Amino acid sequence: MESKERESSLAKRSRKSATMDMFLANGRSMFLAYDQGLEHGPSKDFNDKNIDPGYIMDIATKGKFNAIVFQKGLAEKYYTGKVPLVLKVNGKAALAQGEPISKQNCSVEYAVSLGAKAIGYTIYLGSQFEADMFQEFGRIQEEAHEAGIPAIAWIYPRGAAVQNDTSREIVSYAARTGLELGADAVKIKYTGDSQSFAWAVKSAGKARVYMSGGPKAPTDQDFLSQVQGAIDAGATGLAVGRNVWQHPDPLKITESLKQIIFQKKKKTEQPVIVQGQA
Ligand code: FBP
Image (cartoon, rainbow, N blue to C red; front, side):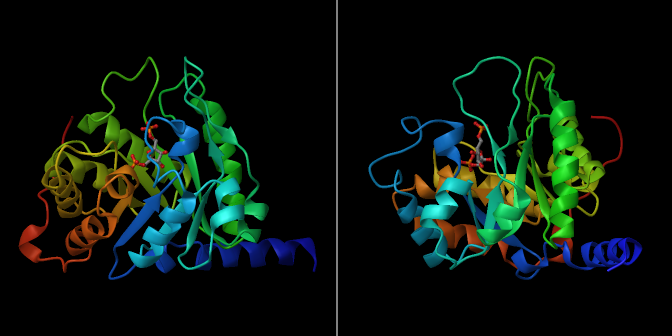
């Protein structure tokens, strides 16, 4: 194929197919995240059961999650193909101190060969190294779109420049950064209340918003109220790890989450967006 024709066919394909649609049910979505072994180490978050990636694959399958999130090594050895795969193509360990940076460890092509239907990439907004991650994500996003799959940005404000990583101002900045860098979806932390999170959702524009789960909440009700707040704010859903697979009954909490996430939107529940400064 002539190079001009090839370029135009790639452009058409990326516009058409690089959407989050395959992850959605009634416009909503719930992912099970399991990259904490790399991000936090095997001792901090895990017990005898949930240290086994096979246990997590089983939760994702039985709980009918819309995707499982793995790093490449886990995908190679444990992914069964029973739920869609989001492959994280960067990641970092928790040992090094200082300004965070997370670099690519898996190509988009290899991710696709493992069955990935989207790629995930973490950007530490505010880090002294944010420009490296912006640049790398830019290339990866284009490669993902050329392969016909969406790019999801985990956007975590972090480093000495960030005072409070859950403020309305900083979370909405994270959401907006994802939109402007071409993310098809952003995974951001909850701000603590629905009204401020609604501004983050508004800031993300057409990029879909997934609330990040965070450490296990003290009670189920605490966590469920956060998720309800994010959904009321207009989030597409949740990408959750510890609050599900650290739970004594992961499928039970999954059912409660689904009731909140996939409930029909009522007009009266639409959030009021307050314009203005944080
Ligand atoms: P959790 O629901 O367990 O918080 O998982 C979401 C996630 O984004 C994981 O994908 C990632 O490993 C972890 O949080 C990063 O945690 P941290 O905020 O400590 O960097």
